[in-house]
Image 1 (tube, rainbow, N blue to C red):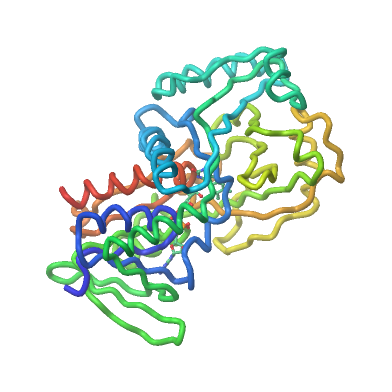
Image 2 (cartoon, rainbow, N blue to C red):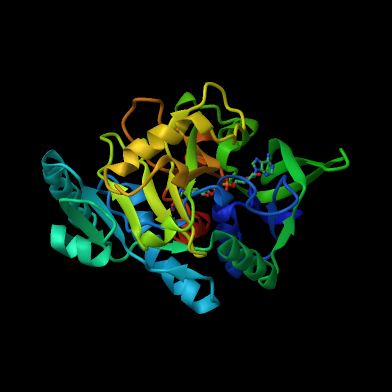
Length: 372
Ligand SMILES: Cc1cc2nc3c(=O)[nH]c(=O)nc-3n(C[C@H](O)[C@H](O)[C@H](O)COP(=O)(O)OP(=O)(O)OC[C@H]3O[C@@H](n4cnc5c(N)ncnc54)[C@H](O)[C@@H]3O)c2cc1C
């Protein structure tokens, strides 16, 4: 075998897996089609370290988010990756939303998130004076992280562990052979290469369903739907009026958690993301300027000081959803595929939020699948 373990995709999850498995194994190879890491979803998100409040009890999303949050804070401290444990408010702006807060708190406690506080109007005014709310949940363990620095550190540690990273090479074919897989790559000069690997880990984000199909695992329930989220920036000087994350109460099926307000490590403030399933799976990262009015309307409920000209189009990201529009929430799909006749092939599909928060916990989970 040319490689013991091949990981496809150098987003934040593939990189975390590469770091963790290269601690245990030699001949680890990470393949990425772009010339550098994190050119897709991992650079187009809210950069929030989620507390694990909303996910269904017992789901991988819930378990890996909780574990991942703790691992990520420890990792950031250890390796000087910039982060801030700034906390988050979930706000009720009308009396009918107050019971929803109660439900969120109960789900969170069931998930092991036991540090939430209920704040009344006067306490909210003390900590975020520009925010309007009748009541709020405060989550002290929610934070933000500089995702680029995090990915850079995963990359450096992978290489320090002896792992190899090959950029600008796209996986175009995967064939089962007797004791592993033969993988075909297309490089940036249009040359094809093949090599063999005992274990293959599919961490290809938006195209992970296609990679799975290349290996012969075609399953309609694992088909990815591109689901776009757009952001608007809150222009200076009003960005200085917000210092924490502020979320409305979420919509019922968790397609997204409502247009919220996130702060970043540089003091910038973003509104979004919204939730729009794309008609076809294309990489449409354009921001729709005409949405400015509706973004303003949603967040003015809790940021009443905002005016139209305080916003500007910022960026968009695309969620790799296996949940069809209108369907109930789906969990991360992380499986070793022996049952489908593909031993040593590990699929990670539908790694949407909280994938960034969970990256180290997902990596440990995959490491266990390999050991088993
Ligand atoms: C709008 C939005 C907001 C979000 N906010 C948060 C948040 O605040 N907190 C949080 O925890 N999570 C958040 N997420 C989720 C988080 O961003 C993702 O879960 C995470 O980035 C997924 O990382 P990944 O490595 O699985 O995928 P990706 O970052 O998509 O990486 C996959 C990589 O695989 C490569 N690849 C694909 N096909 C091939 C091929 N054939 N050959 C070689 N390489 C290939 C791609 O080029 C890509 O680099 C958000 C997501 C979105 C869209």
